[in-house]
Each structure stands twice: as C-alpha cells, then as structure tokens.
Image (cartoon, helix red, strand yellow):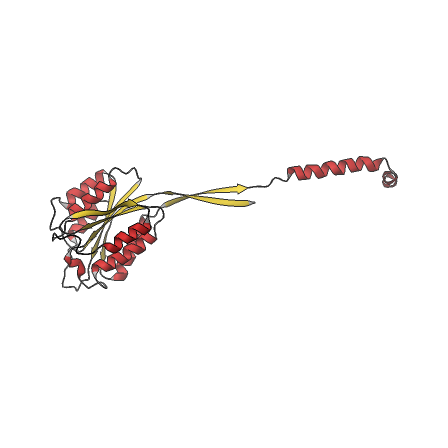
Length: 238
C-alpha cells in the first residue's frame, strides 16, 4: 500500500510596518532597535507557510517597500535593505503606516488579514490619525497587532499609549519588547496566534488481491474434479 499526502493552506495575508525613524537607532537592543527588529523579522518569515507577507517602512511618512508575496527570498532581501536613511522626513507617522498597510490588504479576498506595527514612539507626523486608520482597518476585516520597542532604562523613551489604543481598537494585541529575547518571543507568540491552517489530503493506492485468490480457487476446484476420477480419488474415498 502506498500513501501520498497533499497540503493545502488557508493563507494569511500579513503586512509588517517597521519604524525606521532616528530613535530606532537607540542601542538598548543589540545592536540597535532597528537591526534587532530586522533580525527577528527574518525569523518570523522563516516560520510561515504559504502566507503572503509585505513590508512597509515609516518615519515622518510611510511607503510600501514590498507588496504581499510568498517569495520569501525576495522578502528577506527587502528586509535586509531597510535602514534609517530610506525616509528623510523626521517624525513617526503611525497612522500613515497603518493606512499604507490597509491599502495593500483591503481588497484581498483573504479570510485572515493582519497588520503588525512595530515602533518606539507616539504618532508625531502624517496627516491621518492612528485611531481613524484603525477604524478603517476594522471595516476591512484587518486585525492590528502593535509592538513597542525599547528598554525601560533607555534615554530614548518609548511611548506606549498610542500603540496600546490601536491594538485594543484593532482587535489585536499590544506587546512591549524591552530586549532582544522579548522581541523574539513576541513574534513567536504572534506566529502561534496567526498560524496558517493546513488541510491534509491523504491518498492510498491499495493493491487488489481478489483475482489472485479467485484464480487459485479455480485451480484447486479443477484439480479436485481431475483427481476424483483417478486412482488417487479412489484411495481418498477408501
């Protein structure tokens, strides 16, 4: 008997928005907040199965760096290219970042759409209020997770309030990453919360022995008739 298995996934569409403002260069995470976030981003991508993932970067404004894709090799290359010099406008435009994620996700016919906002500060730039953007996300069925990055003792303070409100209103969760391991644990937790559903179809090839047994039965039956009319049959009857 041979067995084969096919896997089908109900894909999750995920937009990861990463703050690249100057404050993300603080070294309370190693080697700094931004590089720590990128390293964990690589690990997060490695743990997905057939999910489409896209990247948004933001500082004083936001733009989509990589559209939704299942080409994780290309996605990792884009992630490697992220640096604090990509956007010259200063500030932290969280609302604009979320809006950019929404634009990528809103018309996707996916059962599960997720935006992950990673930042270390309050909304200080952009023309769209973060909570207004969160309401838009809800209307398109997009769940929003937020991660505040930064140590408690750092000179570059972390403002959690806006990120907490976004997560609460966006049907997601808020996380605080104070060190590299905590940040890694957060992405592992999101990975479990938004795990892809995999359906297994198992196929079996069963060999049919019916005709083999039938042929042998016919042989034995003919042999019985043959020997019945011979001296062997007479001996057996005696």
